[in-house]
Length: 345
Image (cartoon, rainbow, N blue to C red; front, side, top):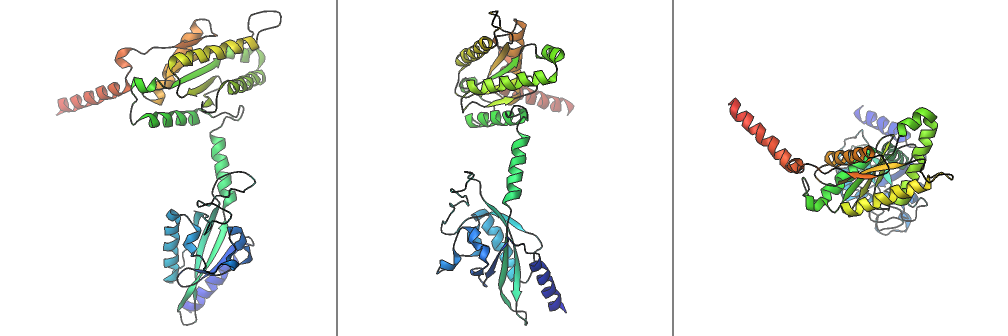
């Protein structure tokens, strides 16, 4: 009865095999003995090999160990109920590189190809093990969709630029590359951040409506794209503010660049009958130092100062010397906490 139950279960699971699945017959050691016609999708011609690959050879090292555990479990008579996803590696190279990426793919993407596997033990009537059946199912569409969703979650739908979360992540990575913990001012001097905003944007919205405001925002985004380089991250922080990460740029160079951006923009928006620009923008600048919040706050304060001067300018806000060092602030807070605990005792 027990053997009949396992045979019925095996038939039921094998009946769930899809037409696009790849079925491999493995021997007791896990080497491929036979393969279904769909095995050509693995990027290797199994019929031309003298020495057949091991089932673990189709996955990267990290995932191969998990497949090895799954195979050992199946060989012991267990029937695992879960699939294991893994990036495909073609044994011996073939149409893919050592990381399962297809350099000849039409999409041009270097993303790995994902498959899922489950193993079914094969038993004789006397219960003796005779290897396993491996079922491989392509998961590429699911992973491609997940990557697309992740990309959309980090992108502003109107302008196509990175959103605030993506920009903050890029800025955090820059700080991490410069060194662990808060950055000294000398290191931060090599990098800068600029925040741009269209002047009187709220008034434009109130007078002309959302459609016009969106059109201006989209146009300014495209303009900033033309004024930035590939290594300068551009993002939309909110409905009004744009941020640009300027790696390798001192504050002096950043001010000159920002002034040029604003001056050129004003020239492009000047009316034909007047030298005055019909649309202007302002910018706030800050060194990339201490922390992400610190940088954005200083740049925002610089933007406020630029607008207070009438707009169309690039402003900076020099922090007070006593609070300019985020590390010292953190140390002072920790010292205060220690003193408070000592007083409590």
